[in-house]
Amino acid sequence: MILTANEIITNVSSKGLDSDLILDAYIISAENKYFSNFFGRKFYNEVVNDSGSNYDDFIDLLKPALSFYTMYNCFWNIHVETGDRGNFTLAGQNQQTIDLATAKEKRNNFLDTANSLMISVLDYIYSEIESSNTYFTNYFTDADIDNFYKLFTKVTIKSNAKHNTQII
Image (cartoon, rainbow, N blue to C red; front, side):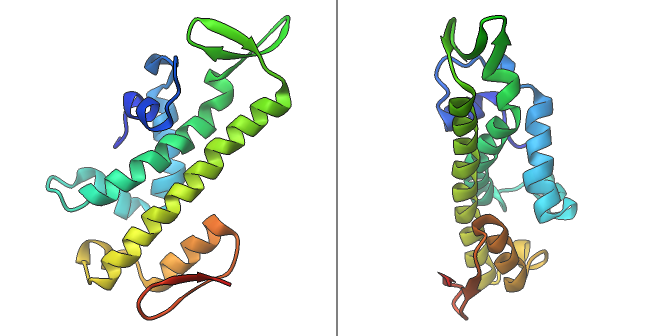
């Protein structure tokens, strides 16, 4: 794992949330779904097992996105508790009534933020490809990154020779 529960709380600013509620299984699930499966297991293993500092900047950009993806994935398990009096959001030792629409909106905000942060990760990879950094060019091409952009923005992306992106 490249992320800890305490880092998630710091990145997401979930006041009053106990780090014990964010299980390693939630973090591993997010890393698998949004990093390993997305960028490929080979690249994931390279980054996680890197003993040097080859991927430090990449990881620094990736951690906030993974934090929000983790919170999106585990939201119903740790943020909302359903009792005999309805749905409640957990806030430290206090409980606050929350309606389902508000809970869904809060959860979707985690996903929207994560996707926005992932654009910065893709921008970074583009710049590393441009500078011929073999730690990235061994795994990705411009076309790969263009396809990744399409997944996150759901619009057509065109990159020019300098890797500047344009939304068309």
